[in-house]
Image (cartoon, rainbow, N blue to C red; front, top):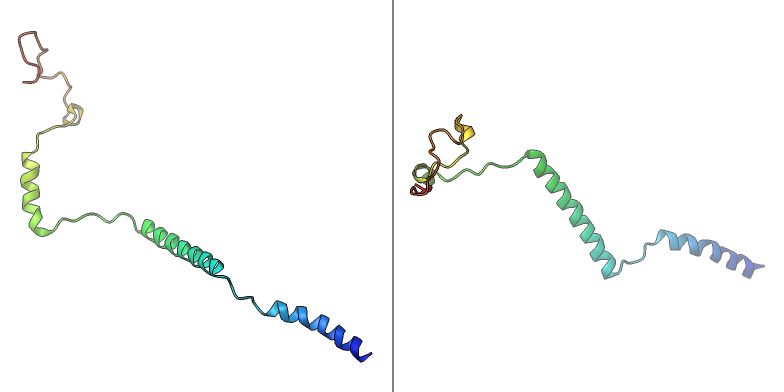
Length: 102
């Protein structure tokens, strides 16, 4: 009777103890958990950055005078409709003797 009682108590206690003790994770499980935590952290960081909006690029103060000169040297290329004119205003149709690139 005592043996049965001891065996019965072992059968009851052993599964309960097995449930309370967590097995030691394998290196692969640990690495997978760290990767998932890193992904969650990265997603949270990216969501916070997206909520703030884009950060405007501000050139350093010593570049500003050079930037104005650079813009003044660029050709005036744009769409005629932006200036309020039609594409054919003031332009003569090219003839065989004229260079249309001039």
